[in-house]
Length: 90
Image (tube, rainbow, N blue to C red):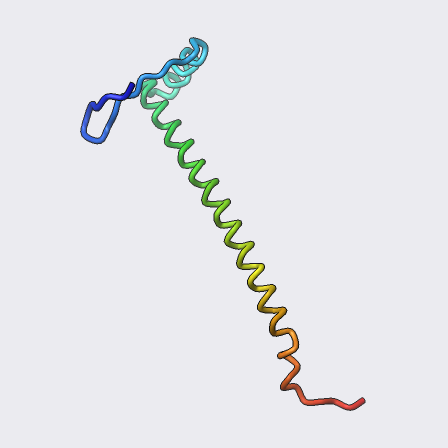
């Protein structure tokens, strides 16, 4: 269930196993944070990680495409490098 609380913020109700709730309470109190703050920061970190992984996948694909294009260009011009060289006699 999602409800609007403040401008730009929403409240989300979730259900967790009791063990996880206890761990959240312990860890958040050790860090001097509210459980809700700890959960929000954890979600933000996870979303950043997912975005970074998606970006890395996109960059890898782009680099691979560029490498293929560079290989094709090299293949297309492999004989043109020697066209203007003076002939040598042995």
